[in-house]
Length: 129
Image (cartoon, rainbow, N blue to C red; front, side, top):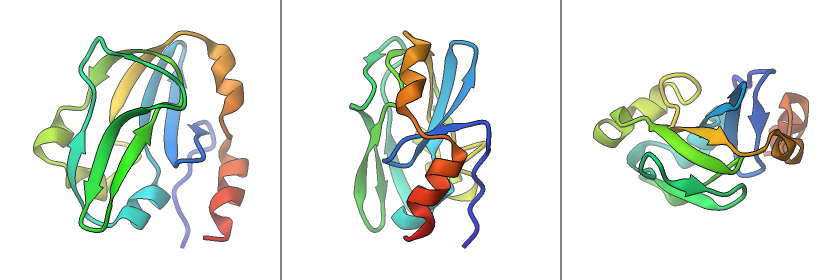
């Protein structure tokens, strides 16, 4: 299956994507992750103002198949939460890249981006799955 993997995004090995706009990072799960999870039925996200740390869990996505932790691609402060997903988690199934964004984080340090994958590396990661 061909997944939509934007070239200008960053990716975690746990299948989160990160779109960087100066020091604001929009975070979501990849189409690959959504496909593996199946139908998402519940999303638990942090509060605005909460501090988050790269590589640690910041929330949970629950599907009909599994419960999966969400991992922070960068450290910083949550400045916006996609509250639509709390009321309608199914929108994550339809469009995990655009409408299905989870949180926006004001990142502490751009240096952490070096710990993430770019699109070619991420494509290699999921190629055998």
